[in-house]
Length: 144
Image (tube, rainbow, N blue to C red; front, side, top):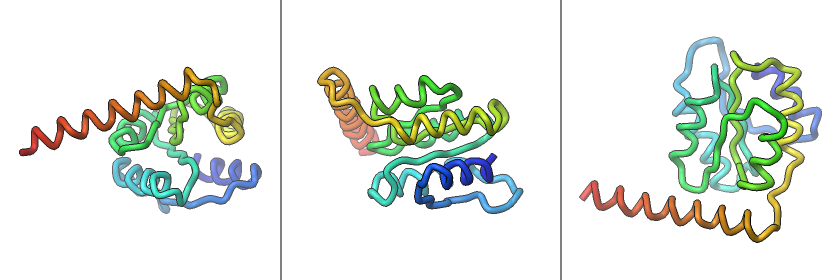
């Protein structure tokens, strides 16, 4: 599905940073996730998209990175609402779950959506950041 995703993004006028994979050999999704999330966290990319078999593993890996709010999306409503309500910045999809036509609609909804200025959504995303910081502090204490 990667070729279709690249074409969809190009059609939408998006600048693409391609972090792989670049051949038919299997790759480990945590490695790709690290690259994609690094681009999003640094501001090099506004948002990220990853495709794997189901999208689940890529989503799990992406959510390990501070500041990343990733979700596996297989419908148009969640694609835009994830951005509008939850400030989702990484979309994952399953190439074995959906086809390129649905992927086109999902990606378009994701790319065109904007995070709401509504106080409830901003407050909730702020609480996600607090959860993230608390978990990081607990992890540092466990490591000691």
